[in-house]
Image (cartoon, helix red, strand yellow):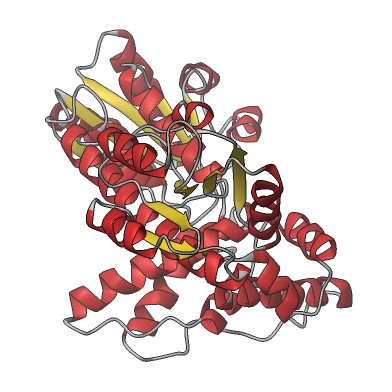
Length: 412
């Protein structure tokens, strides 16, 4: 997720440059232009940012821009800059739909505060639109696979792609990453989504039980979890069923190295290469720590609802403590912590650094925790977080890059 752009429309080059510098120093993304003509190509329903425009400009003025912007998107925040004596004009603009106005010259802190409110409003509007679109198109990947990181988005897109192809699918991931859930989402995104979704463990699945499961999954999908643990005669029976046209979509899951299992003879090589056509790999939490706050909030809300309790406050310190851990148990372990947290049984998994690690690794855990906590307190504003930690901005950004932390993931 990139920073939200702020489109600056100001005909005075010196003022335009000063505004852009103020916003950049505040961690925002200014896009400065000198006229309505230059601005209009940026303005549409897909524009993710907000607009900051002078009222008095030669040619098409701020009122014209406001009217044009609201025609393109009635929910697009437009903040107007007024000169001395233009207050009545600005009040009129508010009545016509402007988000807010500021009198020039304005203090950078006041400017940033108004724009941050506008940005938050824009985020909420776009998120609501996105959720409505998901409901309309029944996008199970977006509804059920949480996370804002690029790895989470790549997983959702991979799931959608393999779901559309009516072939066997192999879902791979470390323990606790949610293989069964991803398999179900593949089923729900597929052309056979209205059919049954049947799950079976590979271990101890005898041929007769396998055939029965395939019959139950007709016109739907069958998940065989830990496929390498399935008995050899059942693997042969599965290959034969696939070759004779089984009327069920086969999805296999594994936390093991199937290439190694094939070399050892635990997995039939014909079955392995057949499954390799459509693999989906689930990234671990260690690979996407920025998704931990999103997942934890979701799990806490779910556990609280199931227990009939009000969800407890999730403080920045709680999230920082969670992000400082490596989570070898992945989403399953995070869910367990969230359930205990929702029931008031622990303080959310905030732990001291793992003493079994070397000094450098322990220090890295603490540093990552402090960076995340500072960003949470600053609501994702990197400049403010860097100041809070008494770090130069470049040093702060270097540390974020080292730990794969993105400031925008902490913005509300």
